Length: 458
Image 1: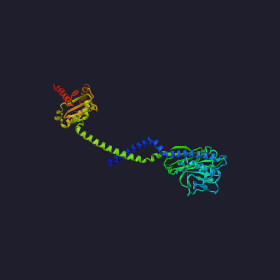
Image 2: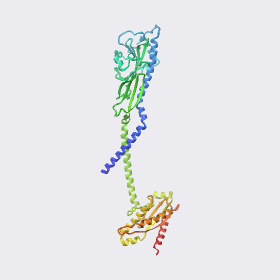
Image 3: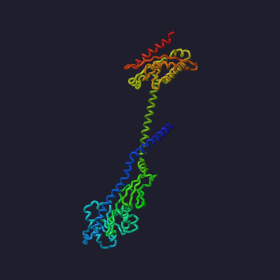
Image 4: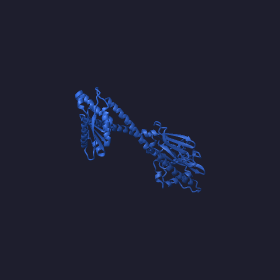
């Protein structure tokens, strides 16, 4: 149980680390696209302001030119009902000359811009300061519009009336409010106003209320207004995110008196996509768990293979290694030498000291082999006191020197409590091309017994 808990804890930690790295790599890699996606609606709002700003500026200049026309023949006000529900006369005074001009010009222009005049996302209107009237582009029969639209405090607070603006602010003939809540529709709105002058005096302004009801990027945002030099700075940000002070800022200069700034907290990019981090965490845990299971199975398989291929007494390979695919592939790809080894007079040790001391003699031979050869070499106990060394990428002359060194390493060290030593004989040969390993071992075995016979000669 403790092992399971420890394994689970380790995998959770590793999964969390990997998912964290992957998640932040994703955020950094796609940060530009994510930011562009977030500010798309802000850019759309800015584009709409630019479009409508140019429209009312041109309309205002045309109306102003007609208002200042010196001709005495002012057109008559049309009586066909077109303007029913579009004129709000708060003082019940007759239409003056410039108001009649405005109505006629606006009706004329509407024939060429029907889409603009019928746009439900805006309210186009003319505010007449000279006659205390408001003319709208569409019927508003049930509107609660009243003369508060002329009230100086309201005009100055939300910057919607050119009459109460400064000459510097109107230098570009445009006054743009900040974002505020419309008293009639209760929607967020931006008002664009262009003054109409008659003999250098403002007699009215042409205005557009741009409704932001479909601008989802404003939902839940904190909107603040501050003064910086000659500019009214409208900041849109979401302060609900931690560390919202660290943000990407997009600035839009609407006119020579108004700047909109949209601030996107960097933490928003992380928190809004935290579900992806959770998904990655679960995915990484699943993958690592499966890899862990696979590794455990491989270890078990390796352990089983080790039991099958290893000699129990010495820990060296046994005969089954001679069928190993890796060994056979190595033989095909590289030169190879073999050394066959046999203990000298091991029977005498068994007879005089017992088989347990004979086992120690065999272990001593195995120890000498490990001291002499590389880890990449195949050290094999064939059975009894017979051993085999397979040396990949080894020339036969080198193998012969190693065989001599092996004999020295084995005989130089005493073993058992009786301080015995043992000698070995060795037969060395190269594995020839197109020759089987068994054939080479048989030839080395012949050379081995030739050496043993030489040792046994008196």
